[in-house]
Length: 289
Image (cartoon, rainbow, N blue to C red; front, side, top):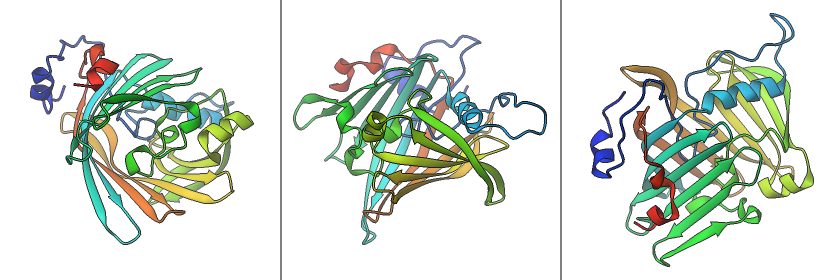
């Protein structure tokens, strides 16, 4: 277990002893996109057969699932003129079961966004609960399903983008193969299964390039309801979590918005896996502290 953020966790009074069974990880804002150690793929009909799009998506989802994580990341917002704003975010995640995950993200700087907090209860088979705390208003705001297409804090990530994969309201198809930067990938196209989900997500479809070897996505394209290729997410700096932890992580993610000519870059600065966090972190009361 890494010691990187232990002092930070102790100062919060929320570090607990780990059991031998505890193991790790998920990043706030990028939980559906930054993948941990990869399990064996679901079996295809016979050896050598291509997997279905659903199998690839489920393998990817399994790889994302973990018990907990602590991280600190920088978020750089860049407009069409190259002007940048840089923010620092501290995040925690905790998976209660395969059907429910809690996530907490708090802005540390700069001063104009400091203490702004996002709390998410992500459910597998029902609408998520999302709350945003705005310190200037001293108010916790609930994010409704109808608002999930809104962009989070001026970034190019919508609230929907930060949710986990949905196998109830989306269908997945394997549409091809491609090599990206020397990495052989499956291409999986996902489409909303109903009009309600299409409206809630704001997307007509997405296409993901997922590594055949490690299951980490290299690219995700987002097509909006007007049929435009609206955004592209790319992952980079994929390497082991630490010298003592070989599990791969994408330490840099870039979301480019082709419609607004804006982009958001997330860089992982600190990462602690297998850290047990107090469930009290994931409360509306803690959002105000």
